[in-house]
Length: 117
Length: 115
Image (cartoon, rainbow over all chains, first blue to last red; front, side, top):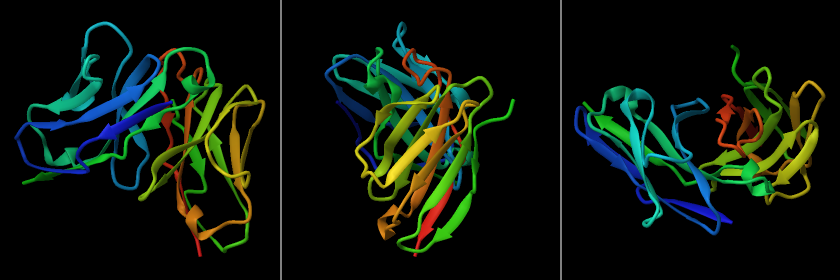
């Protein structure tokens, strides 16, 4: 079984400042890692994902994340945020393989990012 | 191409009633999964279907059920509704359920309120 911990439930940040949203995971098997964003009254949109290879992953809207296997972390960063980045961000994992666990995403509780003008 | 489509978007039901939610996946996607989102529990996996077969089920009571049709469209049903079933129900589709890292795409959800 896997679990995902998002260490901050809310993160306020001023516009044009950098931001880091933290995510740690626990799993007995290898996993894929994802960050999704949810704008108010909408579904989830994929920001980026880590499957293999380079540990630095670039996504949409200027976001990037770094996979750290030893620390089992996958923190999301953006060097300069905009008002439009105000949303809730979810970190998720899925098992690598063909077992039943590979057909679901396990999500963290989410981090609400508020960008202050 | 069209995204994941969920209907209805909003609905209000009374305790004890049942509800059916519908999901049309992205064309070509054979996997459909369902998630429940609540403020207290967050996003929780309900079940996943691939080619009309349920491959995985989350930890929900038997009142929650689903099915998938030959055209990959899916429905989920909740019987004997309880107040705690009030939630946003999200449908997601992918080529193969995400087992090879393929992106899982989400619909905008169906907001269910039980009164």
